[in-house]
Image (cartoon, rainbow, N blue to C red):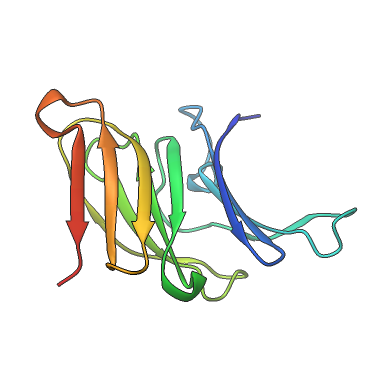
Length: 131
């Protein structure tokens, strides 16, 4: 059993980031959960086949809720972009290595950029701009 660390959602879909226990499979990091109906949530998109070894510290949704931006405790991939357009089969689009452990993420739809908070003194605030 792992602890939930982060959550975001849209419509009847929730995205739950969990703590990594150091054992088990890659699916222990991120879950897509349907809350339709709300009295019987199900997890159709438990993420499989994508290495999420590390805690999912925070989640922010991108444009049209088709993308999720994750910040993790994984040293070589603190920032990850996921395609969540199909909740039954979310896929990883790529990762980015940043200094320190990222703890928070916010996405601005108006400016099409993400802001990440880190524990690293030299990069406590990082602005990630699409090109």
